[in-house]
Amino acid sequence: MSRTQKQPSYLGKVAQKKTIGDRVVRFRSALSNTILDVLKGRGWQEVQGEMEWDFYWCDVGWMREVFDHYYMEEHCRINHFRNHYELTRKNLMVKNLKKFRKQVEREQGKLEASKCDFFPTTFELPSEYHMFVEEFKRNLGSLWIMKPIAKAQGKGIFLFRKLKDITDWKKESYKSQEERRNDDKEPVETYIVQKYIENPYLIGGKKFDLRVYVLVTSYIPLKAWLYREGFARFSNTRYSLDSIDDTYIHLTNVAVQKTAPDYDPEKGCKWSLNQLRQYLIARHGIEAVEEMLKKMDDIFIYSLLCVQKIMINDKHCFELYGYDIMLDDKLKPWLIETNASPSLTASNQEDYELKCRLLEDTSLPVAPCVGRVECCVMPLWSDGCSPVKYLCLQGYFFVTLACSCLL
Image (tube, rainbow, N blue to C red; front, side, top):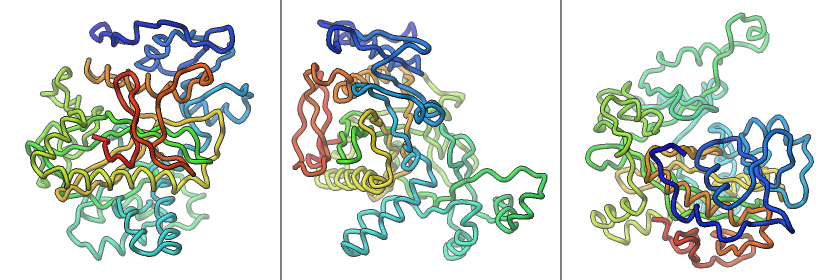
């Protein structure tokens, strides 16, 4: 917590330390930002190094290198599933969504499968270069966006209209396996190429996307929570297709926007989801907004279902996903990506308080001392369970998809 950020009042009021048996919960955290403040505010004890822990907010590198070789007691909890990347790596997410859509169409028909049409036309390069070229030729003049599959914060992203702008991926795709082995040049980095959403919904002439949080505590059976709070991230410059190289126009990532010359760190480039909801209802009416929210519900449910059968379920694991959703000018929501490690670093005091509330509420249903904690959160989606209405927690809410009350 920075000196300019005040700790929310409820974090400083630990009436009783949450315990396991007769001792305080021990936690580790790979991050030193908001999550550290929240866990300490719960009265838990931070441990370092090789000391035993009950709750670990780790990074994905630890999962990859250590998880398979680490023994955990029954009560221990950790914040990632073993193969979380099936949903959070850009190319794998699209691959699994395409596969799931075909399955739904085969089993339930085209009408139900059309509910899965919430992600842009996407190909992986260089492996699907020829398929992309065919699509490119069918849509001459369209704008496309290139993204590295395993980078975040807008790194490596660029827009293009001409095939000559991606010749590195074209050349790589033509090489045989033997030629690639004998080539001294480093292999080109794997990217996805997506059809750019050229008609985004604009407010004040500026583009934005939504950051929505979904907590998954189990894949078998599927149990998930949707967090009611979140925010819209705006670009710092008015939208235009005349300058496709200007990242301040086309990328809404805070990491990009905060480097703009006129960026105000206190004001930021964010609206709360409640502010956005009020604006959209005033412009389009409540029925149109409820329909938009229903489509967003479909995005969350179907994206989780598409990886349910391949996700390595583990009773020790949970995942707090950060969904990035974009609206077009018809109020249709599009899934841009899903983040396994959504940023918990606050950009200002308001952002800090929001993330404290998020993490405080997140830590209740996944706490290692769950048998001793009064946990009021209820699932938005649970196999074999009918949807339930939201219940109050710390004055904030996890909500059900059926209520359509995300915003």
